[in-house]
Image 1: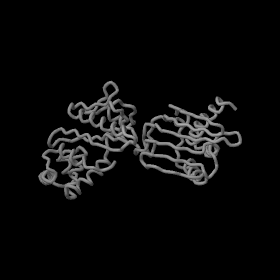
Image 2 (image 1 turned 90 degrees about the vertical axis):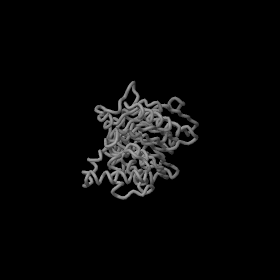
Image 3 (image 1 turned 30 degrees about the vertical axis):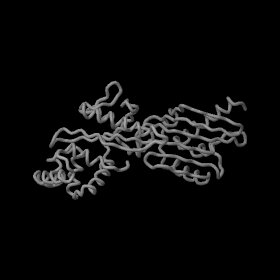
Image 4 (image 1 turned 45 degrees about the vertical axis):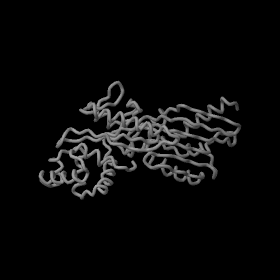
Length: 322
């Protein structure tokens, strides 16, 4: 068999592995691999981190349960996914490949994402057939289903939008996409967004990428709702979250400890960060507006700020991982 034929078979094998997974065909998936102790499957998922599986027995046991059980059936992922930026090298009975797989963007029952994975394969030829000995990938698709998020580049160009974000942007008075780029209508807040995008891009300039998140706070004035968005840098990608409540809650937990906020003060601060007015927060807390104002003044005294937008920025800017 010549190199052209080998190349064709190897590319077909890359597709066959994916098709078998997304059509829930475990026997076809198993046929793609070397069934030996040196076979490995490594990966990174944005939500779950790094994992390493060694040996066909362990890999196949886990895969069979997942493919035949939890794995969703998705013909679009199986057949509409493209292989891009492929580098493939063949040397005798061994070969290796690195490439991008661009799946359709999705919002599955358990997670949402733009569908881009970075892939690596090491192949061995056994009995005249190419099989996979090493499968490794990095995926950024692991945000909770329904997350309102956009994938941006460092200039704010929108690379992908979740269905939830697209719906919310239709009626958003503060955010707009102009010439394909996300902007905030408020000029001062838009400068904060652009600075945050440059900061996020810089995290990917070193030998290894860093992770981080920064809040973008838009205040409408004392007593009026405050909006909080998040710019998240992860694995070289930049995300804009319209509702980063888990990150907000984590930052508030740390800030409450740092500034010595009581349980009631922390709860009020959380409602303000969610964009509620002081009267609405007071009603949800079951306290009077005067009591809420007293809580707020004590929070101001502890944090050293004097208005709600500044308070939200201080509380959400504490140093904590994503």
